[in-house]
Image (tube, rainbow, N blue to C red):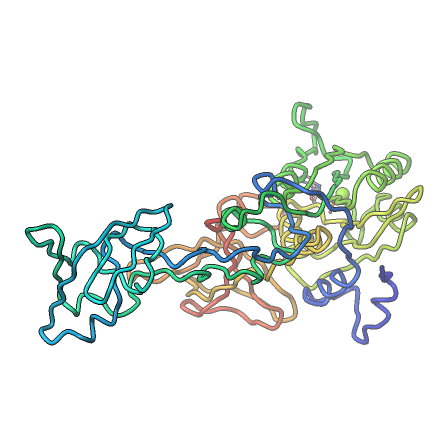
Length: 429
Ligand code: AMP
Ligand code: MG
């Protein structure tokens, strides 16, 4: 694994006191490496897990040309042959799904066919039953030749996946559709990366846990709950270590335990510049850790690196204490880093350009993640507005929002009606 110092020393324009978001992510990306452990799971248990192998289709899917409709299969040559614009065919049998068909219709013949049934030899076209007039004797059908074109309503062998074709690549986080795809190949089990173990705790003498009385000047610890939620969504194993007092021995003990049991350690609080506590000292003493002021809002201070204890090591993310800053730094740094550590290849989330319903003040030279509500307006377009107060302690701004309004590093103030980029919180799958 490359050390943080070696990665940083290669950067010519590195300034830890005003680090652009993109550069911080580049450094993190170079330092983080995937865990090695792999396990074999039944496909249902592999939902949301990271595939550790490429899956190549062992069969053609579908295995035969088959009908996409209930209707009549025939040779499309008949469509060209007609002089009258009408086709009349003799029905010589029926093909059901799940059974092999031994019918061999001739040029003026058809086979009644059900959806999914194997196409009879010599047939390449299916006319849906609703376009067909069944003649009185029941043994003949008639339909207009422009009801279908050659090849219509036929699914080709291997059109979903051909044998030998790559179906899924290592690094894929398995989605519901993927479980179905694996099942369609007859694959019962897959190899996935082991789950990541992530330990986290909050630091700060002002913090109280739920159930404790709220003494004067104290706040309830909310960061462990947002972290719990965000980490659960990443499908990692959680080790919640509670609130750790601002006491050197307690902090060192907590960092060592976390490091010895987890692949990554996330803390909140105690990394600000003027911070009078011991968190930063102990982080620095236990490993290769750097303290950044990131050119972003919210979320400026952050510690990143790797700490070690008794032969174990772990990634360290020392997030700021402010509740919104914790979420913003988690989503914009930690999430991608943990994906990388779990061996997942996840494309960047889409940014969509929508109209801003209001002016937003912004200075170039930092990235801002304003909390936004994206909604459809009367003209059918989508517009975004900010969720009231944007203070980094105002957690309600995250709770009310359904997107981040991402104002890029070089961007200036936004005028009403300007297009801005938004990143949606929720997706369908
Ligand atoms: P710090 O980064 O430690 O200076 O904390 C910045 C602000 O975030 C302070 O107002 C803290 O009280 C608040 N804060 C820190 N940790 C938490 C937490 N776990 N839950 C809620 N607020 C916190
Ligand atoms: Mg503090």
